Image (cartoon, rainbow, N blue to C red; front, side, top):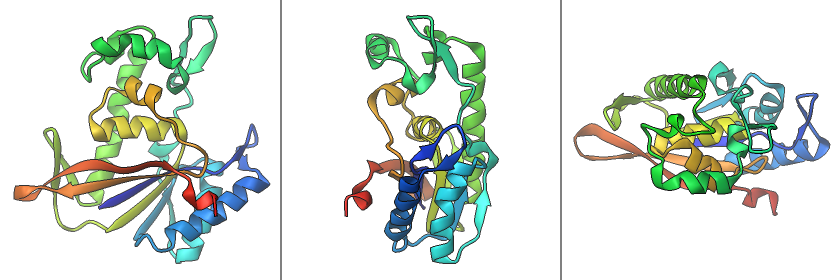
Length: 219
């Protein structure tokens, strides 16, 4: 399966809509994805994602299906050094880099500023939802990887949000989330491609083939 994780186009906050430029970006996305071999188009329930996805779904003649678990991580906030609250994916990268030698998949949620209990629980729930989604599309979680069932679609697009997308990638690629939050960014209307590559004995592993691509906006 080829999974396209797409951040919504330029938003108009706090209306939860798209700007005029955002609509132009969404049309460009539809053109980019028209030849991607998509079988399914999904969206977060938030309007800015649904508006972005609608252009692709209509161009391809596919139903737009809503996945509630892909909404933005709106309550994943921590208190920064200056006392202000910030989303976890916007914590000062220098703070995270200082933690890097100690960051592991099993302990990142024990290290300040990420040591709030609800962050650990939230990441576990996101992983469960993500794995349930993968299972519905032919890839069942199996230890450190996945097992291909052979009955999944070829191409799936999910229109979602920056924080959710980065955290989903951390789960798929088995990287401590703070390292992904500090090291990568996803511009509006960007496309990130993850391929579940086949391994011997029916196993599969997700590998990132492209991150935050916006070349379709440069034409």
